[in-house]
Image: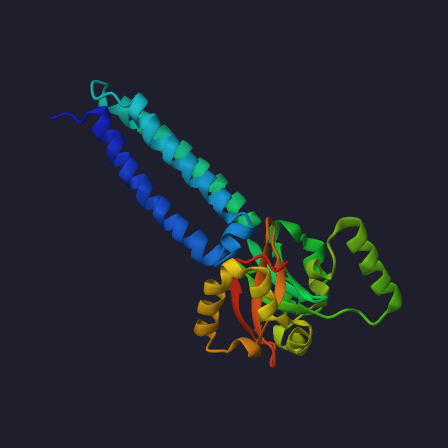
Length: 252
């Protein structure tokens, strides 16, 4: 019994869905974890990757597949389709990989999610700490920043921020461990009750986050996190400065 084009396309669709599921899980849980998936553009990139991959392969098979063709020609057609589909998937994954958040850097009272394509080789090579000379591959790394003591260097930083909007958060040469800035985070964090007052519709979400953290409202503060597409909220212990959770709530 010869395979119909609809059956062939259906098999191809099932295989594509399996690959799409595996890719989606990796992107959502590794490259763009938690609220960073939406705020850093992961949702749009994933939709493009999966949409193109799901369309190119199965649709091409439906159009081209002809059980009456000689076997060699049929194999050649399916091979070409597979190459096109894999190429489209590889290109989409590369774009997603390049846009992934690699560092979530704290400085000057707020966090910034820094994407891989926002850091060039020169920025990385300038890092004094070898830990920050390379880009994390399996998920973003949370770091702090330490401002320079030199007045001219500080002035240059402020000038760069004013001209490009990219300040100390985008310069690995100033990165330090998060533990080195936790006292500053605790000092500058705003009371979580202010977030509740600004967003009463998010009260239930805030309560769930407090329950997960095992903290009462009076012991928790929040710090803004600037991502590519929207702002998020980072919950911290108001005494130790340690991060408790990240919420998809606009801090303003």
